[in-house]
Length: 159
Length: 91
Image 1: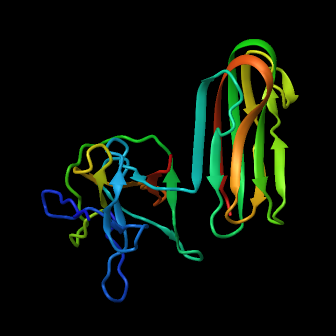
Image 2: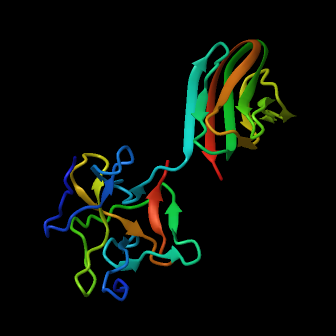
């Protein structure tokens, strides 16, 4: 249990209650440079750099106790390329409890598609999905290729 | 400078320090229909160096939180003086 800090006039800082037990007092933080209150939103992010093979778990998010909707965004940069093509895949379970996979389309160098097949940046299009409670949302990479790439993924709960 | 508004039991509403100067009192706004706090989620900002919580004319202090850098130092929480939105960082 943490006690509230105080300024020189004994004004206490914000205290919250721990989400783990609903009882334990917990200090609330702010960024000392920007003075912005730090908050936890329903946003998760994952990344992997210098990848040379497929990555089965760039980011995994577990849906809560109720069905929910999410936005999924990805981007990738191929920094060295020899051959083949790589795709970014989204796997989830929809609200009817049906497993789904979607290969994410995006803009790569000069056009739209699903394949990363050369050096350059892939800017993925945002997908909106409805998911079943207590299932996983997984972003991964697939394909047969010889390349080095970085990948970034963000999953945001929207309703 | 605005003072904190109060309910019938004299409980003050939230106030924060202005992000423009770290000193001016700003009433933090809530959307009446949803009771949601209005916030501005971004990562920019300036430290105006005010170490202690400023107070309105009724001595109600602005929001204080603890520095994320050391977990000890009290830090004023800022709001946008024009919009009344509390500044947050959710990244």
